[in-house]
Image (cartoon, helix red, strand yellow):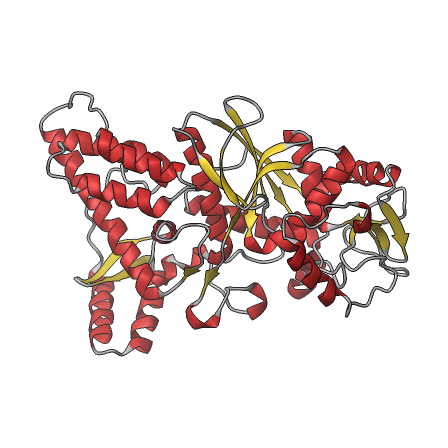
Length: 470
C-alpha cells in the first residue's frame, strides 16, 4: 500500500517516495524553550508522531531530527524586539541557559506523557553556531546577503521563487504589513535576519564572535543548518504547525535553496491549530493556557488528550472543549477495558494460537492511514473490528496490538490491580461527588485540587466519579 501525503508546497496529495529507498528523513520544528508548551503546541507533535509511526508500519525506516530553539527567536517575526530567551530569563530572574534547561525538560516530560517517540537527533541551537555561521558565509559568497546596522540579512529579491510555499497573495499581504516596521535599512519588506549583532554598549547572555561581529543567529537559519547536517541538502519531509508556513518555513526554503541550488524538502506537512471554543487560537501571548502536565490535576490522563487529537484530521482545526475531552477519556477507558476483557478471556483458555489480523478491518485501518494519515477513520476501523461479533478474541487482540503501534494509547498494558483508598480520602471523593451533583462547581473544583495534592486524581464520568493514584 502506498502512503499519500498532502504536500503544502504543491497543495496536492502525493504518493510518498523517499530519497533513499526504505528510509525517510524527517525534520520537525521543535519548541522555543522560554516557557511551557501548551496543548495546542502538542497537537502538532502528536500528528508528527503518527506520521513517524505510520511510516514504520508501512515498512519505512525513519530518521527524525528536531531542533530546540534556545537562542535567536525574537518576539517579533519582523526581526525586531528581544530574544524570547532573554525575556524568559528576566521574567524569572534566572540565566537564559537555566531557562532553556528547565523548559526543555518540561517539554519532554509532556512529550513523553503523550507517548511520542523521541527524535533520533535532538539539536539545541546553541550547539550549532558553527554550522549556522558556515551557512551564512555560503550565502554571503553567493551574493544573497547584505549588512545593516543590526545584522546580516537575506536579500529575498535575489530569489525569483521566494514565497512559493505560502503563495503570492500571502506574501504580498506580508509585504504590506511589513511596511509599518521600523527597520528602514531593509531592502525589501520580506528580507530576514541571518545573524543579529549584539546591542552596542550592552552584553547579551547568549552571544558569539562571528566574521561579521559579536552577536547571535537569526531564528530561521538554525533549522536549515541542522536539517542539512543530519539529513543532507535535500530532505524527505519537513513538518510543523500552520503558523510556520508564511514566514519561518518560507525563509528556511529561501536560504537553504539559495545556498545549495537544490530543493530543500520534497514534502511539507503542516498541522492546523487547536482552538478554544469562541476564544480562538490557544496562544502563549494570551497569558493563561493549558499544558499536558495540568491535565492530571483536572482528572484527565495525558493519553485522553492524545485520543482527543485523533478525532479530527491533522489538517483541520480542532476545537477544544472539556465536554469533548470527557468523551475522549470515556472512550479511551472503554477501549482499554474491552482490551483487558479480551486478554483475560484468552488467558483463561491458555496461550492462544497466533491469530491473523482480520483482513477487511485491518485493510480499512491501513487505507485510512495511507490516505494522508486519516487517523479518525483509522480509529473508527479499530472500533468496528473490536465490536465485530464475527471476530474471535484472538483476532481482535491481534488487530489491537498492531493498531496500537501507531495509536500508542497503551491499550495492551495490563491494568493495575484494584486499590483501596484511605477512608479520609474516600470521604473527600464522596463529598466532591455530592458537590458536583448539587452543581456547586467551585467546591467541586476545590476538592478535586485538594485530592490531587494528596496524590489522587479524580475523573468525572456519566456513571459517577472515578479516582486513581498519581
